[in-house]
Length: 409
Image 1 (tube, helix red, strand yellow):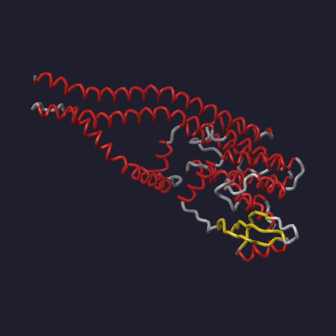
Image 2: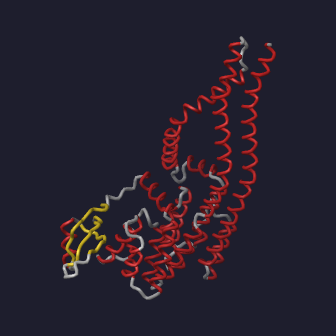
Image 3: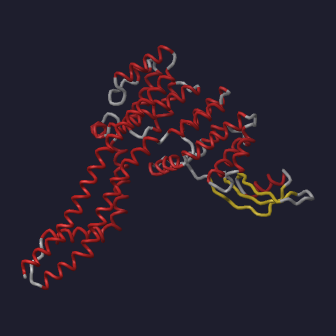
């Protein structure tokens, strides 16, 4: 199915121009559909075609990246659709209203695709499945459960709230790393500038005077030249290295292997807490929307960024399906400690598992946030010390030639 952008005029006497987008298999099919509703096409362009789906890791990583970038846009979209539905508008008209303010954008093309899917008889969840660069499996499952239970507006509102609070830990960690990264870049810039601009002139003066240059000065100059001439090649090499590490990590992280156990030990505790917070909050949202526990675990598993957590969720879903209790199925000490399992057991016995999982997710988020704050408090002074050491080394490399020159005279 291809999305087409058209400009047409009404065949009535008014001759009013109309712009819009419509999905169709070919241009002739779109023109025929528009003629049936009284529109004469004067311009028709293909917007995009829906290519074949692929499970290649790079494409999946790109889709995850696009979903993260569009998190705020999805929150606004879900909130707007929930408001329109609560006001009494049908879903098709709600999508039309949301499309009017986003026409010509990537969000507008996505909404047009959803609208055409609904017109073809698909549900909103089924139409969302055709937009993997916009919607996660968790969102689709919640929407389908909301449609079945007649609670779609409240589900969309919950999704909007979920996206509003999602990513806060990632932003906090990025903020903690930004200041040290800037100091490191500044230190390297000082090294490059002094070693390529100032130190060569001093070395030439020493050589003219017949004085042997200090070894420290020569080493600093070599490092500065290496950075100056090597960074254009270093960027693509770092990109290739990062891609290779990701692919190797996916190949080695087979459940039960020694490589997977090693990766689990190397995984930082703060990231472990953050991933577990996402899982517990997602489970709470799915259960509250009416999704059964087994299906909720299987929906969340592909979205888990760590292979060990992904395998744990898949295994837990299988055990629950064979009659195990939730706490018993989640008994994996690498991810769920005894306290968490006891809380899950109490929540299941009291019938308030979704509420308990939501509180547990918030608690884990707070714990991860405190760990990030402690990490930032230690990292900033360390970065300042490293910068001071860099600048001091370069300064010493500039001062030593002056001492040697003074001794020569």
